[in-house]
Image 1 (cartoon, rainbow, N blue to C red):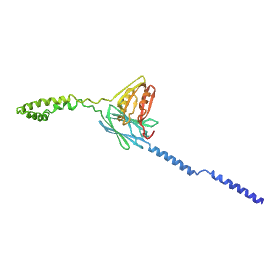
Image 2: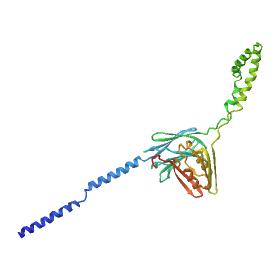
Image 3: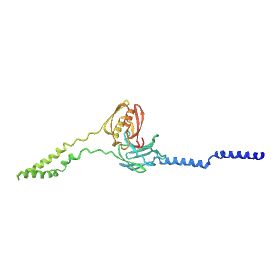
Image 4: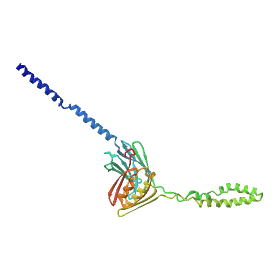
Length: 317
């Protein structure tokens, strides 16, 4: 019996110890490698889906030039602005990163001197492409699935004269034709045959005068929107009545010399404001709070260097 007891004790101890030893056995190395690969693939997929600015291509020459900015990943709505001193067109891509292949270009073709590009802001990311110009240019932006095209053209000046004012003297034979029938009928109703000749002569004289009289009193044009922005010693004042965000921001940019990328669609959003005079950053914050834009103000209390605007997602509160 003692011998049997002696043999059974080690067996019982071995049985009790076997469970925790197996429970503490580490997971196979293959499982850990698989988990790491899965996390790495997920991160790589997320990086591929983010928007990137890949290349910039210049086409055409002279007055028919266009710049194609090629993108990848998620679609991005660019913000554009024209700046003077020196002349340049700025295209910002909120939420996009520059690719490693993106670099500056020396063009020197027509009015386009060069193209600069790079990461303008880190958090949130904003990639900026700048078209350096030899002279002011008009531009038009079109968007495709994987590219933004900026078409350049000369600045067009409006006509010096309005067409309707000079029209009566341009075609004198056609003027008396229609009124002649009306005045001749009136003379017949009076019962005089001789009145026909007088009516014809009267029509010629009257027809030459009446168009000039009607054109001399055109309806008054609609009142332009009222925008007044003053800036001095770090104090900003904004008065706007039935103006758009684009008009107000453009005037703020002109007065403060700050870089402001005016978002697309800002010319359709009306704003009424009566702000300041107060420190420039306080006034701008009051203007943009409650607007459809997220904003970042770069500067100090009494000066502003840059205003960064991105359209707010209406689904995020």
